Length: 168
Image 1 (cartoon, rainbow, N blue to C red):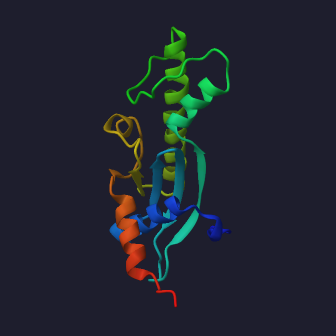
Image 2 (image 1 turned 60 degrees about the vertical axis):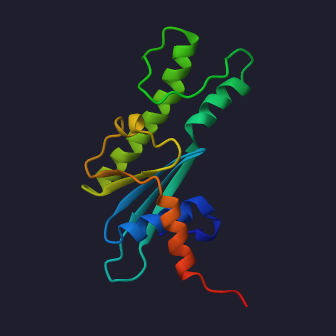
Image 3 (image 1 turned 135 degrees about the vertical axis):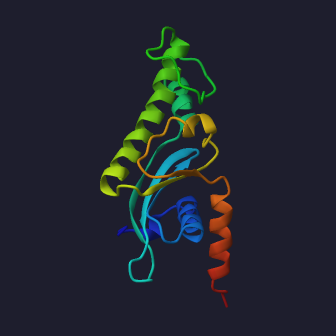
């Protein structure tokens, strides 16, 4: 179980609420592809109680990786992210940035899905966020189903609002 649920960001709470609202009886790795790359592992309740949040991670998102390369160095250009597989290895500075930033991001996502699949064979991967493009989904590998859910946050917000207790 997650030891500090009070420290969870609202984005992660909303995404997990959406996953549980849509698919309450499945184990999910919720993969948020936005400003940050977030991963949360969810297991359904075996007794009808609350689902279990096993934990997760937060790392730089794709745009943040590109921005960091430009802002934290003196000579690297400010590039827009690409979502299609980059040439590897890059044969120019621009190609090398794409190969590193985009290729590293995809490799990280693939590593997380591999670990999820090892721990929970056949469990699903639920992908949301602004960078959950078809080109990215085609590069993610998983043993279980992979679903892109562009409205996951809306489902989560709606579910949380339905269960919210009014404040006096």
